[in-house]
Figure 1 (tube, helix red, strand yellow):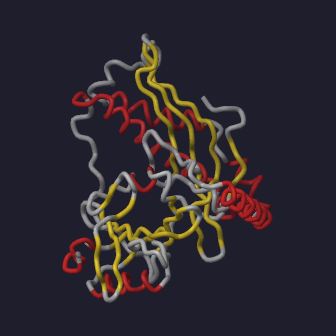
Figure 2 (tube, helix red, strand yellow; figure 1 turned 90 degrees about the vertical axis):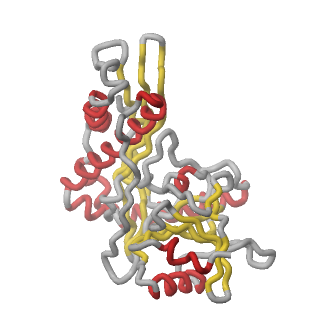
Figure 3 (cartoon, rainbow, N blue to C red; figure 1 turned 180 degrees about the vertical axis):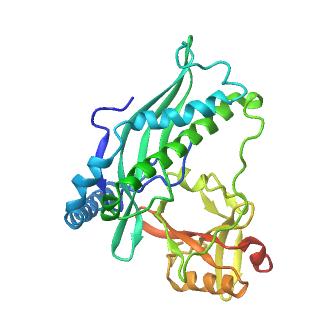
Length: 331
């Protein structure tokens, strides 16, 4: 099912971030800890950015809207059903015509900001909603959907010029939504779940240019977007921050890593004078980048992490094992 007003006009302000990382059971939200003054300021900034975005890409708004699939809910359902049929636990129990069935509701969808390319704002087809596994005794499992494919990050003009890419982007988001639903069902099934649940990718990123690709910013709070990246080394999930200390040159860092060491979450230890703020491109970042390059490791993709809309750290996707390279500098 798709709500009648589900399609939303393209959003290009920094307060809107496409869910390029699929988050089973959780979507992007704005966090409750921001004080009113900061919230009002951010709302004003977002309004100005959105106005500028609409003026710059005005000609593309109607064109992309006409090419958006009219069956977004069906797209997701068609991706879920074959996966569900193959599920060893739920497959024999769930049928579309029986009291036991999967129901998908799309609450909103559209083009949402996911980053920048120079002065151009990039957006990605994004799907939000909920799902419910209905049974004769009521809903036995349910969750939310927030999905957008990192393979479809373009300007609104580029999407307008290529309607096929809109349909492909929506389908890719639907695939990710289906995978997030299946991941949640695996958790519900426990030992009865899929015999072989796909493990997180163990390969390293590939650099496509001389400079790292800038991806969408991530909030420090709520923690789910960062937690879903899979940090396990030197990382505290409760505070959603790296805890392992390193010293590179004269600077101390806090750095967390994924199991293969290919993605790093970098912050500075908190100090009375400077807090723990560091941003992409500053001297601390350049020190880390130069160190990695000296070990023949490049930064393929990078994200700014923000707290209360202010830069506080960054996430680096690498072409090699950064965690191993940093081992001698661990405190």
